[in-house]
Image (cartoon, rainbow, N blue to C red; front, side, top):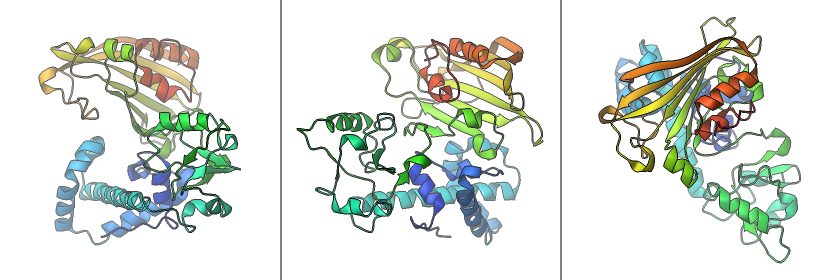
Length: 383
């Protein structure tokens, strides 16, 4: 089945364009998904259409086609799959993701063309098209909100939010400098816009959109939610580190996984697993016999809004079987050769107490604060 998306008709496509590294697997589990009901309904319709004609032979071909993708990006779900229906649903979502990526590539190619008055970006502000100079918007101080520019790559025209061209969006430091220079009356600063995206200021969620942050985003609001959209895995890559961090605390990234404790919807406990991924070398690039990664497990009573358990351990991975590297930081780690639990706390803890424990255990790993920072104030030394 050839899946096609139209920018004006597909909530799923617009969500994929709006959220960096979005995957339809973010909508895979059952749940209400209150912020994305239309996208959830769309992805389920597409999956149902894909699955309808799929017979045993077709499933075999689909698994062969999507085996590499599922092994790399959905290893846990693939490992947990047991029935033909499980594998077929995985293939359906993999096909939907592939179609989204093809469409995004087509839109990126189309964005090389000069702006057109019919581009979606001008829907909310038709007069904006006539103000373009050399096919770009002229930035002024009123377009700039320091809390959004560079970090989140958004400009404003009135209450409308505009996004840099997709070929420019990754240059966040440059965007920050351009925003700063826009305040100089002696300079004219022009920026190309994404022709397919726009939003209203009130609709934007204050959360990071870095392209190296893949997966669910934790906020104070989602912390105690057991909704399926507020559970899942995210990976933070260690990028933009300073020289001291790189030399003394080598790090490739960190996994964060939030899951309900049981299939029982009345179970209020939400579990967190943090898995650090260090490179296959020590500080200053020295050779090492094995990689030692810190891992943490915690349980939070979402009804009481308190953590009730946390423990930390160190896992040893021999170098000869360690798959993670700078070119593949997300490589699925095997079971550790050895693991030793080093500390554990049980009982109701305040958020401050829990954050101090996590921050001190992960001293030198700034990705802990990156993931948890929107929900907590972490103790000094957490990154």
